[in-house]
Image 1 (cartoon, rainbow, N blue to C red):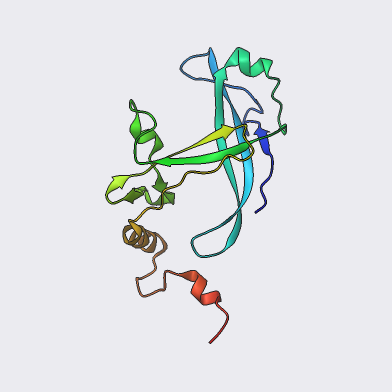
Image 2 (cartoon, rainbow, N blue to C red; image 1 turned 120 degrees about the horizontal axis):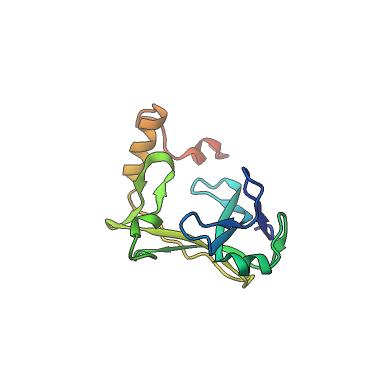
Length: 162
C-alpha cells in the first residue's frame, strides 16, 4: 500500500513549527503527519492522515532545524494496548470510536491508543481489534437517525454477483 513520507506540519493558526508547552516553556513539540492508504472494515480503500507529536525541549527541537513541509524518513505508527501508556492520566489515551464518545473495548477491557514517530522505515502498527461492535452500531444508528433495519455492512451493497 502507498504511504507518503512523514512531513513536518506547521500550526494552522500561528504558522509555528515548534509549539511551546502551555504548562512549561522549556518543552515543546513538532507535529508530524503521514498519509496512508488503508482498507477499512468494509473493504474500501481510503487515504487517511496519521499524525503524532514529537516532543522535546524547545532548544533541541530548534537545533534540529525543523521546517514546515520537511520530509522525514521513518513512520508514524499506531500503538494500541490493553494497559495504559500513562499511569497518571490513563484516560488521555483511550481509543474512542469517532464522535460517539464510546471507548473501544476487548472483552470489556478498554483499549488504549497512541501514535509515535519511529525513524525505522519498517516500523509497524500494533493494533487491537475491538469487540463492542453492537454497542457502536447502535450509537451510530442513533447519531444518523437510521434504524437497525438498515444493513450495517455497506460493502454488500457494492458486491458484484447475484
